[in-house]
Image (tube, rainbow, N blue to C red; front, side):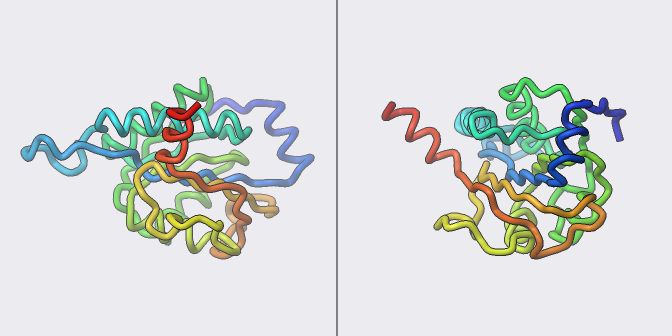
Length: 190
């Protein structure tokens, strides 16, 4: 795991608010153009790049800036995480984890429980990330696309537990859920 820098203000707010924040993003739209590429190596499409940037902008606008990024090692997941981080002007820890490539909900929870920073952006794959999101929240967000979790779909959920080690399924409160299509359509009409 890469060495990370603690932001004193973030750590202070964490202890004052006693709030953990999980941001779960499915990788953005990826390309199937090269049939010789391994699944792990598929890059984002132009649409995927726009979607990842739109999610980053939404996170910034809504005040959901993570302290660390944890992403699958797949090219499409890393690209998604990098574009979101770039949009957020993110300076924190950025960790690539091969164990998140097509991980189950249980595996994702194990990785999350190792985290120390109070706000984590995790980028992964379906079906695991949809299952993980659905199992983490106390109740699903009121959104028609939550359960199929399309590309670049993003859930923000909070927990009042003190550390990620204490967090389990069904204990996070949904704070927001968005899909990039909504953001990009809004941008077109504005």
